[in-house]
Length: 122
Image (cartoon, rainbow, N blue to C red):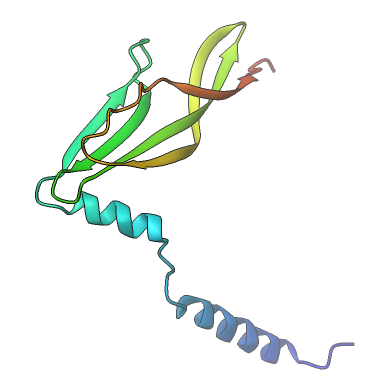
């Protein structure tokens, strides 16, 4: 048998949840660096999409000449197929790169890391 009553356990749970809510949100150094570039007055925003009819975002690039930074997010996808035909893509992560503003932008290609067969039969 428990040493606590139901009311005591409920109160402890409420207190634990309130304590979790009061914890400061941790922001990664990468997020801080991204925000710095995104908020710069000379920020350039470049979105690269696939040209295969699916309009999949391949990369998002933010550049700032005053900060001498270029931040690239390359998105990773799971390709969903049905009878060997692509029926969709699900974003499942990203790779982040930081370069200098004047660096040459590497070629951006669609990153499919997995294929998943979809079965819609009942």
